[in-house]
Image (cartoon, rainbow, N blue to C red; front, side, top):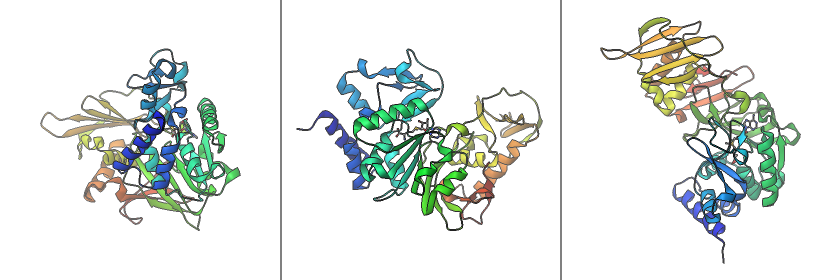
Length: 377
Ligand SMILES: C[S@@+](CC[C@H](N)C(=O)[O-])C[C@H]1O[C@@H](n2cnc3c(N)ncnc32)[C@H](O)[C@@H]1O
């Protein structure tokens, strides 16, 4: 007779298959085998407001149901693990067990298959690491986690579940040279550009699958192939995914902005375009050092390093104005990028690609000869 956990695992696999997230029978077997409840540890946070939920204070069946819903369970907020929080914690998640549909989608999109060696950046709870161990074998999997506490928690859960991959505590942006070269690199935290170390640790013909994000929080999933000349290139995938930042790439602390300063002019674009998933990604390509704030209907762009800012405002007669202040004309750059995107018919970000060379990292539109923007590498 099967246990409740086994039944819930099968039901989860069926649900993920039905939505199209899970297609490969080998990954399905892994989802049906790995006990996700072990990876949630002793507590998780429930948002919004990040209230800790303790396993010991939750009926067993309820805890299992939580583990096998297709939800991201946040395990750390602002570096505070859920199991030590005594009250709700304000701030941003810093570690989590990503929702299973996204985990399996990433594994499938990364093209990870039998015999592959994988470097995972962002062990988190260790759930995705466990799926890879189940499918590929412990000796094929290396996973790097930045946060010591999260890493220790994942190590314990993996050991308890019977898996023994190479686990590294450190900055995944440096990869892990000792087990290189890898067939596949997969990141479950987002980067502003592709770190140089990854380019040297993935074999020729191997792939890097990583969420590319920036300080406006626009995001796109890059899938790159390593070429024999040491460069890499590929398109962004069709999935709209967003992950927490790799810690060294996180945005700087926000500063205040000035009201009513700068030169004013009409805006050539509706700032509402930045509410669109790809629109925001494109705006970020134009002004990669800027953060975006929303103040009522107005959009504020801020570049902390130079103090540059742009503030849009709805005009009483229709349309929008913008005030720009500081050495960087942030709105000019955003406007140019958005107008270029509009001229191309506003394609989804899967219509863009990325080429990485020693000299530059260039996101292009259409094909590699199309309009392009350099990443802040
Ligand atoms: C979304 S969680 C990972 C989810 C995980 N793969 C799972 O299935 O549970 C992202 C993780 O990346 C880690 N992280 C952030 N920056 C990192 C870095 N530079 N190197 C390695 N890990 C990093 C965070 O501490 C966090 O635990």
